Image (cartoon, rainbow, N blue to C red; front, side):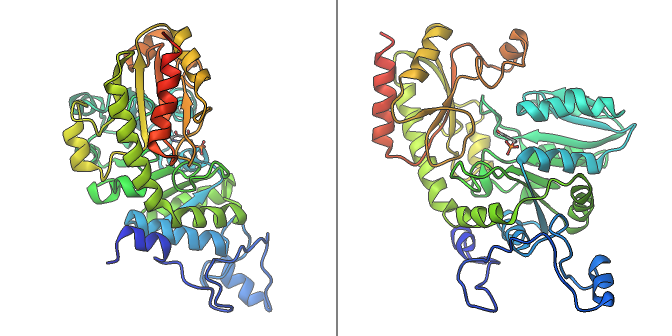
Length: 390
Ligand SMILES: Cc1ncc(COP(=O)(O)O)c(C=O)c1O
């Protein structure tokens, strides 16, 4: 089989059959016309593979879905109008009143709210545990657990979950393992090959990579994805065809972007670790990361995300983020430009001080999504902002 970088350029995406266009056309249409009522019926019943209505299915989106399924090593994939649409639609299609869900305790904020507030409101019990600890995972499982939901690496403390072991734990009671693999991208890890049942992405991040599209995706086995597709058709969080075109374009450069993200994040992590104003650096690529061995086994490259703790006060941490010149102080991640946030005052304000402490989000923690700028320039930028603290 061709390598990932070749498949991200070509893969299942062929030149347009009618015109030879090397880029996939944007089928910017709501609906599709038919010659006969019989053809309509067959398409509606899914017997002809034809398109009916773009909330159900669309040619540009279908080409994108095949491409991601191929890159993740899954049979099928679905795209959504946001990462959260992918997550909520997938989880809701798999659980019913009376079921139980086990999930990582330091999930992305909105996913955390889905687990803590929303699902219990519909009679689905949820348990949030530290999934880096396999023993607490095992303890949290119940007979009626239907879904085990993990993120790895986690946001913003870059902890890892052992996907292979998590799959064994989930499958021991017949539950499915869902992995949010946004931070790693399909180039950083292949959860399905490690036993996961479904992989989720905020395609807003690395897959598209240019901070200009909000999108999400799920990948897995054909039947399961078909079930989620019925829920997507009903809830309506389908992607727009033009956004699908942009993500197809983004994926073509994913391998070289990820290479650069990996290299620059490693260089910046090493610089920060050697700086006397930095108390701690969280990056799975550093030999002293507590799960470095797992990262080396489970991931290919260590990704473009890191976080670090400054020595000093919250005020100083904020001053640092405001002093950066190349890097942008702003949310989101996985883009060509370096983005920096201070979670305690920006992205994780919904957590209590105790919860923040428990998950390792100190007042001086800074999360960095390392972009593809020259790494020497980034180091220089961080260096000058650190000097302003003296
Ligand atoms: C790990 C992770 N999962 C899911 C999401 C949600 O994605 P979106 O913003 O595309 O809805 C995010 C957003 O930052 C994220 O970081």
